[in-house]
Image 1 (spheres, rainbow, N blue to C red):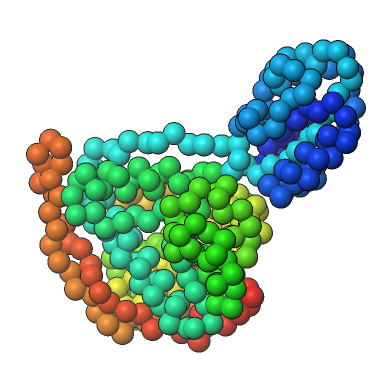
Image 2 (spheres, one colour):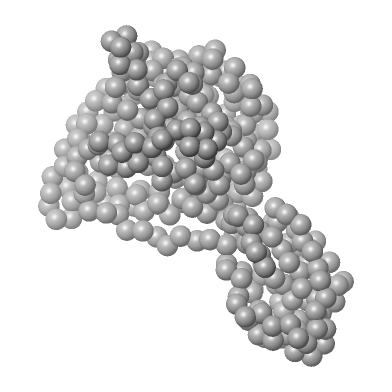
Length: 344
């Protein structure tokens, strides 16, 4: 049978339709689509085990496992369509060897930007923003960096590419807090299967990108800047938006302002070829660049961050000094509030 994109077919053998109905009641909450049952006889043979299916989850009263012939009595098969997150697990990836100071500077700047975005959103008491994607962290040593990098990589790809942040209407936060182990502030440590139904309750997701520019200054000098969306992220972002049925905003953080754009229209433009990828001269990655004026001003910098020096020493003894931003604060704009209200 043909699988729909982003879904997994789990087949559960049961001796009767009544047992199949009980299975439906038990597993239905985990499904994002229908559970249907068909009757089969001796001739049935399943040649492969469905990817990601866990036999321990439901017993096979007909004996054997899902890769064997259903011998003897007629059985029923429950065909359960599950989200991809149940079917896929990504192996833990080891941190790469250092790729130069620029990599660590951008990693640290990304962690700083995520904190400032969450803080700015939470200044409006209508919303509460929480870390959702694995944080890039702010490692004090290379060993800490390795741990942060591996956790960050492992968290990607189950439900798609998790946006860095989820925004919720403040009125439902207490209810959802009780449903997540450790509360919503602990989402980044939870696998997707432990957060079923939580992203769907959010207002939207937020993907944070950074740049070492002052956007307003550059624009005043006739050098308009852009939102930057890496081509390698498009499929994962599209997948997450489809499964969660939610929009993702991209917030591009500069050193004088931050800008926001709804990625729904951007992803559609990419799909029909209206936006062409360019190779970024620094990252060497194919990147879509969208003019900032296609979005809105997220916030303006009202408190300048302080840049401190940090030094990491690698396992090989290499010394890597780089600047780390601390502090700073953005004042959210009326345009941002209007954009969030449009998604409510």
